[in-house]
Length: 359
Image (cartoon, rainbow, N blue to C red; front, side, top):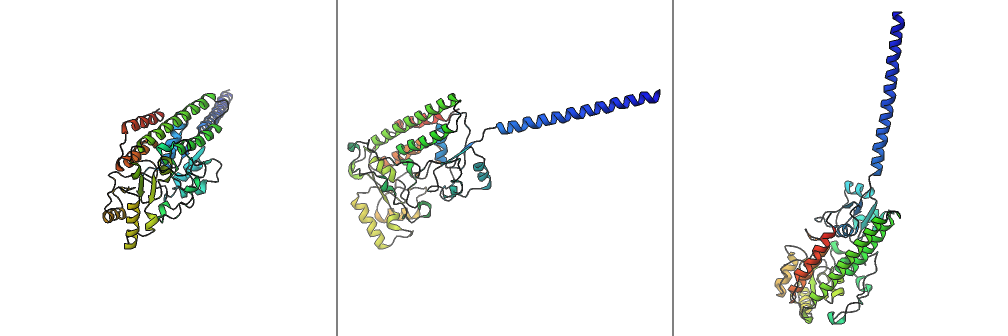
């Protein structure tokens, strides 16, 4: 009898253990399944390569979309090497937006990826400024995109972009076209049933375009205050040609005269002095702080002063946004060339843009 009772107890223990095992096993599967589903459900990030592109994408993308900036503002996009961690971010993105290899050669490896969207010079039709009145654009030549095709001879590895000048954002109308490419591609990735997100995307795109149109008008008004015979921007590289074409200023790249040399030969000095006098050049613009040794030497030997502030030609400033760098550059150029820049009006546009990126 005792033996029978012991057997019954053992069977209950075995049965309970088996049931517990099955429950634990099923619970484990459910838990793992739930974890996997949550991992899968986590939306992939939109990645913007260059800081300026990231700023524009962030202004346009609905707040519900996660945007990751790949490169830091301190990194030189011309020479940057994509790290393994950054490569992983690119490979795991839902979409990648970039100015393209003309500006960022390191991105070339990802250009054939279907998720990569180029928004730079090779992706848009350059604005021809037919809507700008000739009264505001003295000496404003024909602005065909062909003028931008000869950018390979500046003799500096940072700015040797081949046939296409990538610095298109110095013209607000070109940023509008960049934004349209971004907006259209974000829209394609949004479900047709997600009407709310599509509506927000459309509204934000319209806001961005409105601010940029206002920036264009503001810039025209500031440049119009510069005496018409002093509207020449002289800097080291060919990076402000789109700006010059958009707003009626001549641009001179010193490297057109100097080539690779960082020393000033007598015949070179003579050529540069003649050119600066003919163009009534009042100031030289530095693209870095402190100014390069070359520019300081040239300033001294030609008795041409340097602008008090540098201009930022390759993207954003250390702080601020797409509009604030445009306002800074315009006020630096206008004030240096004898005009009068209304910074207060400019910074109202900066604040409007900032408002788009606030949660």
